[in-house]
Amino acid sequence: MRKSYEDFADELSRSFPQTPERFRQVVSREVRTHMKPVRHTARRKRRVLLPLAACLILAGGTVTAARLPVFQDWLNGLGINAGQAEQSIVHSDGTGGAIIMETAAGSEAETADSSVQEEALFQVTDAYYDGATLMFWAKPQNEYFELADHVYINDIDSRLEYVAETEEGSGIYECKVTVVDPTLQKTDTDVINVKVQVYTSPDSRSDFAFTVRSDKFGTAAQGSGNVTGLDFGQILAYQITVSPSAINLHLEWEVQEESMMELLRWGDYILEDASGRRLTSDEWLRSNGCSVPEQKEDGSIAFSQDLEIKGFDASSPTMTLIPVRVSWDADGSKIPGSEEVLEDCAVTIDLTRE
Image 1 (cartoon, rainbow, N blue to C red):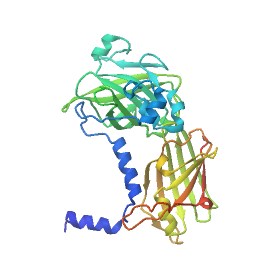
Image 2: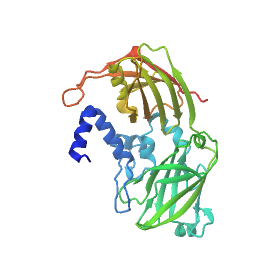
Image 3: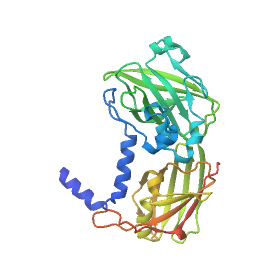
Image 4: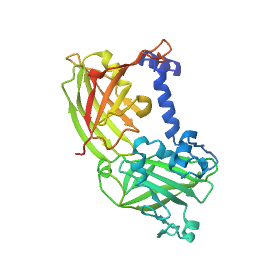
C-alpha cells in the first residue's frame, strides 16, 4: 500500500537523529550562498554586500563597496588563499591574459571591440580558473539571463553551481562552475574554451562560447593514501583535491565505537596546517556529507565522508584533523563552553601532489 506523506515523515523521523542546530545553521548558510535559482532572471536579484570591516581593509577606507572590483566578495571568502587566487584572475582589459567572446555569427574577437560587445549574448568582464573551479563574471546584453546547468570546459562536462547578481542593479552576474573531471582538474593548460547554453527567454536558448587565455591558470593537486595506527580506528583510504578556491577531501572511515562514529560524522573538526594555524569548523566548513554507517562482522563501523573546505592554506604540505566533542541540549543546540578538543585523536593528511 502506498505510504502517505505523514507516514513517510514519521519513518524519516524514526530513522534519523535530530540534527544539531549548529549543523543546520551551517548547511542553511551555505545553501543560501551557493543556490542557483531556477529560471533566474535579471528581475530576480540577490544583493551581495561585504562586511564593513572588509570594505575598509580592501578599499583603504576611501571608497564605498560599490566601487570595489566585482570579484572582491568572492576573493574575500577564500581567506588565506585570496592573494594567490587574485593573481590568476583575467580581466577583459587584457590584464592577466585575454578573454575572447564568440560573436552572434560564431566568430571570435577581443572583448575590447565595441561592435562585438553589441552582438554577443553576454560579455565576460573577469574570469578565474584553478583546475577545481571556474569563476566568470558576465554582463548580459538582454534583460533575461539564465544559463543551463552544464558548462563544458575544453569539451568536458562540468557543473554550474550558481548564477547571482554581484550587487543589486549592477547588471553583472557571478557564475561559479565546479570542475568534476579528475583529468581536467590536473591538466596544465593556458587556454580554456567554455561552452554554455544561454536562455534568452524562458522558452528559447542558444549555444554560446568564450575562450580565456592566461599563463597563470592553476591545476588542482591530487593526493591519496590511508592513515593507520589510530587508537580509535583507521582511514582505509582518502582522496584529496587541493586548489586555492576549494579543498575536497573524501575519507573512508573505520572506527571501533559508535560514539566515535557519531562524533566524526558531523565534521566538527579543528583543521591545522603545517605552520600551526588552526581553523574551527565554523571557519572552514563549506559542506559535509556522510554515507549511512555500516556495522561490520568484527564489530567495527564503516562510513565515508566528503568534506568541502574553504580558507585552509592550499600551500600547506599537511592537514591535521582534530576532532572536537561538544554537548547538545534537548533541542539539539550546542551547549556553550562544552567543546572538548581531542588532541590525542588527531589525524594528519598528506597534501603533497602525487
